Each structure stands twice: as structure tokens, then as C-alpha cells.
Length: 402
Image (cartoon, helix red, strand yellow):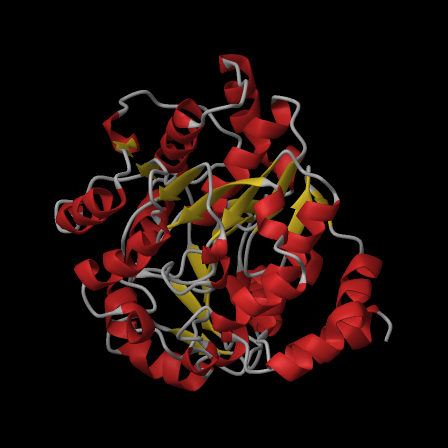
């Protein structure tokens, strides 16, 4: 198979959460453990940092990778989902895995992958671990896919674990309360492995403390640090993520990282890791901002930042996935904006008609479009130079326009 045929084959395997939602979620680690054994336990051959949480885990992972790269280490970075290209998920020192390595991995392991009925996410995790092991990285920053306790990445024993924060997202899988979700996220805390908690939240402190006692781990809270760290990532929410990244580096044993490495790493995240879609300014006049925030906690921060911008009129290109609780997020959006409702181009994308009708109940008025690109192009035509266009609501909306 060539690269495109390989990707098509991977996407066709058991439903993929990115497209299908809840049906793709595996309830145990049997498959990834079996794959690890087949690959001769690659995750045991490199040091790692495990990053979970509801919001900010992607940005925090990129910050950590950037800092460690500045310190001269060979750094693997595994994140999900990808925005444009599958290879974004697996990088070393910012460079994406070569397409031929993707094809080779599937070709060499296809019989096992089919027999074991591995999901798209499980085989991608196995591919990342195998690649990092063969390329002999000094350390890999591994972002949790979904939850933590039952996530395919959770076969690693990291040098340090990170949980950025707890919010209400993927509630149909992880639980309806912050405490239930915290229990799933706390599943990445391992015996005697220190853990950094990004934000202190009274509602979930008890859950973390119980897990810390059970695992004899040490817990550090990054939000206790009052210092503001400068970063090239422009979102207001990056203030919290940068504190989390810095505290993680400070508590990471066995690595030599200077204060200059930390400051340079935070100021060169995009250059070092090629992170996209986080309060990314795509053009000026009219100014276009896109952001992948997609749940209540993430959107609150982003929409508050949007209020601080100077503009004559605000245009919002909006699309969401069908498992989103609309009443939790639509109430956050400004009523004075002009809306361009659209459906992300994935099976679990919510119909633009349903979104428009639901938004109307919150006095959010606009037109509907059959595609994100059509909605975005319409906004570009209508907007004047002094206006702002915001594109968001879902990672998959942003993916279609960058």
C-alpha cells in the first residue's frame, strides 16, 4: 500500500473517535498491551512525560517539548487529534514522522493489527511508541487521547505525570460530574511518580488526594505560582498552561534545563513544534482569529479574550460536533455578532440547520452554510477591514480553514 492507501485502511478499522464518537471508545487496555508485547515493549525504551486534563493538554505538551528541545534533548511529541495531516500526531524535535515510516509500520504489523482488531487510536499509539523507541529519543511528551485511566497511552510509566485541569467534556463517556471525570483523569497517576496539577479546583482536590495516597506519589499545584511567563502562544489560557509546563520542568528529575532554556522554549513553541489552531491569527484587515476551544471552560476564556479585541463588527463562523451539550456553550457566545453556522466535515458533525435553530433560542442570529469553507468565505466577503472574524466551536472547524 502507498501512504494514502495506508491511511485509508487505518481510518476504516474499528470506529475512530474523531469521526464516530462514543462507539469508538475502548473500555480496557487489552489491545494496546497486546500490541506493545508484539512490538517488544517500545514504551519501556524511552523516558516520558504523560500529559492529561480537559483543556490545555495539547498546548502544555508542545510547551514542554519546546523547552526540552531548547535544552538540547531529542524530544518525541505525541498529540491528537491532527488538524490537517495524520503525521502531525507523531513528531521528533518538531519534525513529523515521515510518511514512509507510517506505511512501513502498518505493512510490517498489518496481520497482527487485523487479527487483534485494533482501533485507529490504538495502532497510532503503538506506531508512535515504536518510532520513538527506534529513533532513540531522550524523552517523549505523550498527550492523553481521552480520559486517562483507560486511554491507550496509559501503558507508560512516565518520569512525571501532568493533569492540566478538569472540565465537563466527553461526559457521555467520562461521567457527568467533575468528580467522575477527575477520577478518570487521575488514572494516569502512577506509583511513586510525581504529578503536577495545573489548576487547583476545590471540587476535585479530594479525588486527586485519594489517588496520591494510594500511589505514594508527590503532588504539586502549578497555579500556586504567581509569576506570569511570556510565550509566543497568544491565548489568555496560555498563562495557566505555561505555569503548568514550567512547574513540570522544575520537578522533572534527571534533565539539565536552565532558566534560559525555559524562557526560550516558551517563546518559540510554534517555531520548535509547529503548533497550530490556538488563538491563531490567520490574517489582518479583517483580522481572522481561529481557536480549537470546544467546551464550556475553554470557550469561556476564549470568548472573554475576544471581548477585549477592538473591532467594528464581529463575525463568528461556528460549527460543533453532535455530542456537544449546546445549552452549555451557546449561552457563552455574544448576541451582537453575526453568525455563519456550518457543519464540520466529519460524520459526528452537527447539522448546520440544527445548530442555527438551537442558536436562535439564545438570540444568536445568522445564516447557515453546508460547509465550513463556504461559511468562512462568506464571512470574508461580508466583513470590512475594521471587523474581526472568529472561527471555532470545534477542532474540526479550525482544521478546515488553516
